[in-house]
Image (cartoon, rainbow, N blue to C red; front, top):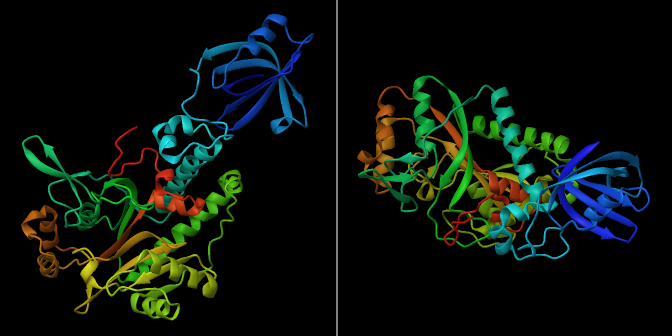
Length: 414
């Protein structure tokens, strides 16, 4: 049998040496014994350093006390790569490094099983998203993250120099995924980086994050909520099948509710007032998000809640109004954190132009707007942050723990 990996630990007991090797699947023990193992090989094994990369060939024997129930008795060994000493961070988990230093050394930190598990889980979430979307008849698209106008309006965008023109990093693929619907492709999705120039230093904000987005021709908001609920149910099902060891490592009992409660913004504010949680007239505060999730956990047995019917004041121009002040916008909250925003879009050209002007933006800045003149069907959709979903599932304290290379106002490396 031949195995290869990083030297995780070494115990030299004189005539008996235990070496644990680590790879993506876990730990394997190599046991070298005086009088059994070749003497030259035994001495080479004793001189190994932690985090060296080696390959070992030998016989596999059952050993109940060894990791995974077996050990390798070596016949030969190749040293592939040595590691400098000391390591910049501790990767065995015996000593906890501070979060910023761990991010500084992200790809060494991922040698810790806890850190590695986060991104393996994230990969499975994205895989399940794609499986569900394909199975539900959605087509995957790939839109540009360079745009000639700020997608969401406002000032929270990154301007860049595009040859001799000013351009922006897309705040979302919203305008592109909507415009595709004018082609007759009536259900689309994509996943990719988006950018928000928000000067926040919180546990929930990133300046660059992975956004899952979908858009579909539909009649009402319930159609959009139904799709997201089914997709999340599928994701949870697959995570329980494929990520049992990760869920056990993080002590997560991943249960999806029979049904996600759907409450209007006005209903939520009434509930929060009874629960003595401070509210705002136009949006939910972080305290409000946590409060309504606690309420839904107790009343409905659901750590999720859809909140619908937000005031138009705080929503983007592309959301369809409901009356003079309301809107067909929604948020999905999970364990006290907003993980999704979406809604029914304004597909009528004149009304969309009016919305843009109401937000104090120039309609001429939006090239995509011209596609709405030629028969745009009614539609709706949503955007979900992959890092926030990962963070909430695993109970991570900071969203940066769920970002491979987090970007915030102070960080551009690694």
